[in-house]
Image (tube, rainbow, N blue to C red; front, side):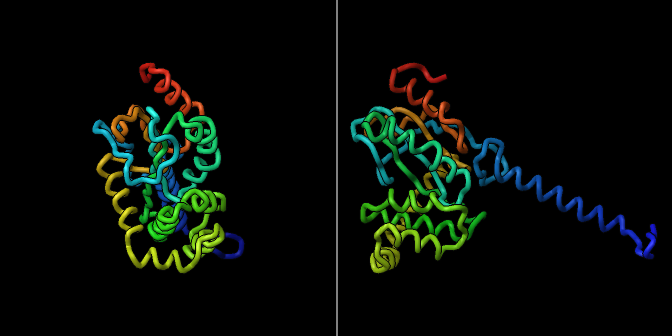
Length: 237
């Protein structure tokens, strides 16, 4: 079709562009997932792990004698993880973890497929954990808008009081990166396929017997209902 200016409209090109945009939108929906989490693979999580999950080796917070536990698999460059850290985690810490009613373990699950700097960012947090500075760094990382630059994460880590010498020395040793990789291996062995994933269950001999697995940042009431049922000894619905 020729317009007034003599321009010929290319329907085939327009359809190709439209098709590409539609496919990109569908891909984004798949990656973001149906419940707000970032899904690593193009299918839902496998469900609740049946084998007990160790708490040891993770960054832990709360009472060592708590009977209920949480394990959070998270990625510092995941928008849903940022929402969870800002809107859900503070209440869980204040209401259950810090009073000693629940024990929480944080495990790293950086998704390099979506951001090549995710692994290095997790290593920075792991280095902070080695000198008992994990939670200030955790909060600093998640307090910022979406960051994709590794240098910015490093500056935020240094802003919590960590020194460049401590961070560089930790990274040269490789122990922090080894911890991150162990967490990733554990996540995959459990069928964890997205972030954030929160495992909730009863604690026995330092291991979590998982009752519920929640992918994404869900309403606070969903976490509280499961935790309260476990604390009261009620069956999990």
